[in-house]
Amino acid sequence: MQTPPFQLARTAAHAQPARHPDGCCQPTEADLRTGNRRARLHELDPHLHCSIIGTCLSTGELRKLVPKFADIDRYHASDLEIHHTAVELAIAGGAAAKALHKALDDRYSGAIRRFDAARTPDALLALWNDALKASDVPPAYWAVMTHSQANIEVRQSAFGELHMLSHLVGAANRADIRRLVALEKENNELKDKIERQQARLLELSGERDASARQLHEQSLQLDRKAERSASELEADVQRLAEKVEEGERRLALHTSRREAAEQRAQQEEDRARDLQNKLGEVQALLKVVQAECAELERATFASEDQPDARRRALDWVSGRRIVYVGGRPNSNAMLRSLVESAGGELIVHDGGIEDRKGLLAAALPNADLVLFPVDCIDHDSMSMLKRVCERHDVNYAPLRTASVASFIEFIARLAPIQSDARSTPPPSAFCLRHG
Image (cartoon, rainbow, N blue to C red):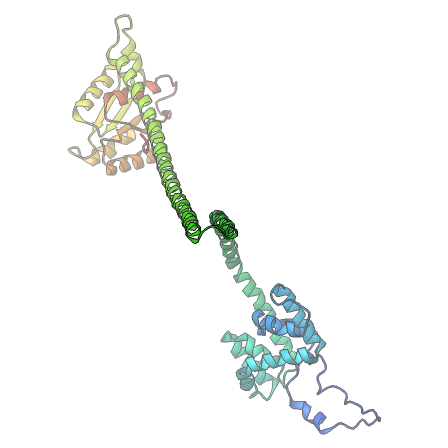
């Protein structure tokens, strides 16, 4: 950057000597001593005031200082309004600029003494770079901008680095801003909840105050009845106090009953929801069982006028090779008999209990379909057959149980599908999660 984004103000060291009213232009001894003094805040270029005020003074400090010199509400004014007013006061000079300068000098007196050791602009820049590495930016920025050795190049370098640092800090704070928005939303929700609770408390307090006012009015009426004896007045007051106490006890009783009723209602609602979910699961399971029973009866108890019912129920397995993994010995023997009677081939593997698992991996690639009951198979065998079937593009499907009915029902749903031996079978009606 060849030229700065601002023009430096003319300090007292570069300004023309002041002329006396009588026309004398000779500089005074004080004017000759200003060459090595630090620059004042109002003497700096106006473009620097925004960065100095925003970086070196906190909003809390500005809220205490700015309202003393400007017509602004320290409690209701926004942070931006406070900042803008402080910058305007610094540019205008006067008592406000002196107060801001003094506040900055008091706060960063240590940094000012440390930077006073610099006797050349290069030494001043070296101290500024060390402060940047140590992340000690606000004290160093004020000390550099007002240093007697700060020329246009030094101030331009410090201003540019601070400007780019503000961009980096803003980018890093975006995630914090998103979290802040979420926290504000949660805070608003909590505020709404607190307001509802306070409204309820105010309602109860109003009822209590109404009872208190009623008691007070009745007490005044008793006072106006001077002719009544003191004992009668005391008896009336006691009776009214008992009524108030009785009302408070009844209020507490009804409150506790209401809370207990709400808890019971919530428990009943949860129980009803659980029963509804269980009812849906039972109904789905009932449909599956009904379908299995129907297909089992159709395949095993065919009537005389339907001699081909069993063959039609197992027609899909004709000429196909099925691998059945898991199950029980009795049901597996019956399944093998049914499949062979329908013209198919059923290879049964117990999943590794007695049969070697190597035989299972060798039998799967040549199968037309692989079935396994989810209630009678170990997880290792099920995972292995899924991997092998997917590797060799062999269709596989789970059965709800190891019963004959589940096997026949699944095969019966395959019968209407006209496809070749490697067609994808329809999904099982049994859900691995809900049954």
